[in-house]
Image (tube, rainbow, N blue to C red; front, side, top):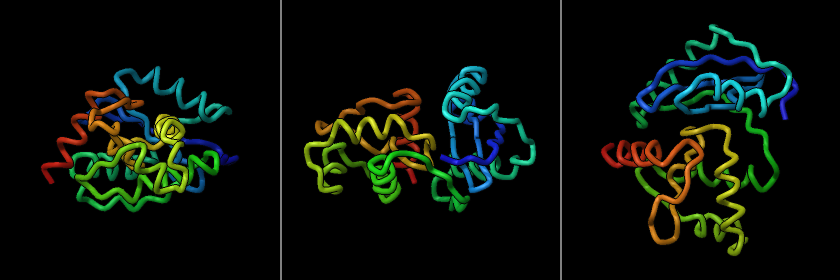
Length: 166
């Protein structure tokens, strides 16, 4: 986990309130919700040590908002993803899912050589700190239903519909 100070900025997006956080190494959290206080508490829980608001992150926020509204836009911001080795492997696999496509939790587990670890894949998706950037919304249940989504099923549905139109 990053030991550098965590800075954050928030804004309003088409999916609700967006909170973007960064360490010296790169973006470490992109949280979505309906209530800024809740998002700030979530950030503080993930990164103890009093994250500080920093308006200097406005260019990164604007870049992220453009990407959110048009997923064909390149999002080439540095990332600082902290998680277990398994989570890192899952998150990397998620980043390889092409825009407009979906896979199942079981497919990711098989891809990682652990075909019975689909629940662990689902848990790694739920622990993903970078909504949209690490596209856990592109992972569905084996039967094709939405399954869960840390940021709310309606947001997952909207993201998938938006990407299908690209």
